[in-house]
Image 1 (spheres, rainbow, N blue to C red):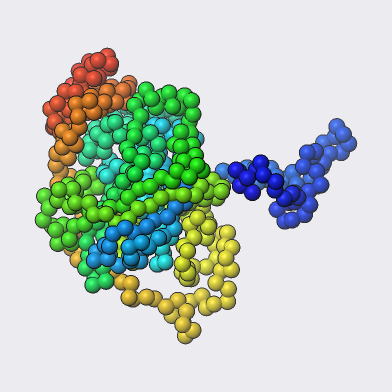
Image 2 (image 1 turned 135 degrees about the horizontal axis):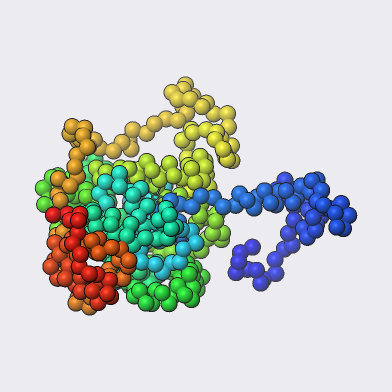
Length: 501
Ligand code: HEM
């Protein structure tokens, strides 16, 4: 019975224990006499309380608060010359999918309308395996090296002493990383608080790769453009929204789908021939930079619509597991070291969060045959490949590898070292400056004011450092942020003891 069917006539269900025995009384515990103590043979009470304390599973380390829905992806343009991926094999082809949108810093119970980036995770159930595109609503990210990811998590979450979010921790760290300015500029802009998940674009952000039937490789970036139009909230509108309803994004997505107003996004790709990677004036695998659309225009691929709400939030949304390592033939990774670290880290997190056999949970289960020959483990419920041989090679035709799906070779060279990534394309200020110069004066003013408010009670030397970073992107950017801080009375203009110069 679904939630919306509750008012309809539905068949009676009779309460049983987990093992099917009838429960005669679900109101009164078993006691010795009307005022006496509990009897330990009240096994239903033990089962009920035992289950209750195990209901909560670990929340995702980032992106804990989210909303999900099922949908359909349809190919609208032929890109088979770039990729052999089965999902794109024919115009008009449809593939079932599941999407989860999230805020990043907030815990599982956080309010939706917060200034933050948004996660944009898509799972396509293709006939050659699940393809997960685990992106965000921004084309770039705060960092370039995965070593800094746990620190990012710490600074956007809570202070170890106060258990409060801390503007000092947050802005101290961001302003010490010049490569963060591009992402910080986007988060502080008018796009920093989408009105709802339906009103934002999505991006794969990283450079991925395509390879085609001829074994030719292309570098690729994915874009998903909302067909609902971009709509955002100001800080004041967001405060009011949260005051009235902490679940605005969840409610909006759920209700739109229930009333048949299915949200849609168009999928586009930017394609870079393999050999261009060494020629472009920016690092093509640097997640803090975009590829200008003038160099690599958007090519339409298809459209997806979300058309079915999950029947049960925990079953499908909380237990969903997206991983950048879920790639399919024709779609591969790239040398981006951020992406490389994600290829390991997500499945690792999910084995911990959901258990070794999390790939059997219906929302995660591939819709094509799965024959991995991984066996056993806690929670195995699918027959465990029965009596088939459990080793390979064997003489019984089991677990045959499929060389026709080999990715073309990728040339890799270099001496092992802790290479300083900032020595390689350290032009961190050009792209945030370009973005700033594209904004209308009104949007620039919003950027200044949002930044000033977000910097809150961070000390002056941190504010000064941010003003200096912004000035390097564009003198008007730095001046605007400084003026907004002064207007708030939040800046005395102290010098930075830690200047980046
Ligand atoms: C969730 C790690 C960067 C998008 C997660 C999770 C981990 C993680 C451990 C929780 C997974 C789970 O429990 O299911 C990392 C690391 C990163 C990184 C180590 C960099 C080194 C990124 C980037 C993006 C991104 C660059 C987007 C372009 C997401 C999304 C989710 C997520 C959308 C939520 C997926 C869902 O809805 O279940 N990340 N992340 N992450 N991450 Fe990342």
